[in-house]
Length: 157
Image (cartoon, rainbow, N blue to C red; front, side):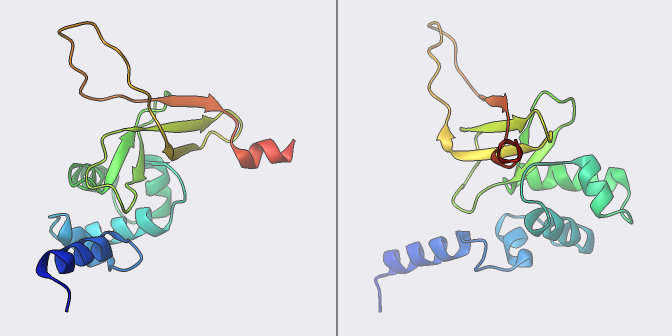
């Protein structure tokens, strides 16, 4: 039997792997009260989108749920650090599921918005370089969006 600290570490690693835990348990672990609508929305965003999505995308995927309920649910999931928000300059707020190893997403990676297909991608392995600020300034958030061409659009040319 492993030591209690090794056992606790094993539990944390196991529960953070999104393939190993149910959608209901993910919401519960994040402190989100599980309701039918929240579960339906979470399942859609967790399993139905491969890259960033907007409220309009979610409305299209779940047409039986009204816009204000979807919006409030996105805010709840964002506040629970299950989603992170992306301002990609398109005028439409985007959301992306936080990766399974993010305890709290702090916007510490780069996003790419494709100028051809207009999709926005998280690039979690491309970190934002530190920005030197004048003395007395304190950074709270950094967003870094690259506008370019995604690999799928580039391979079509």
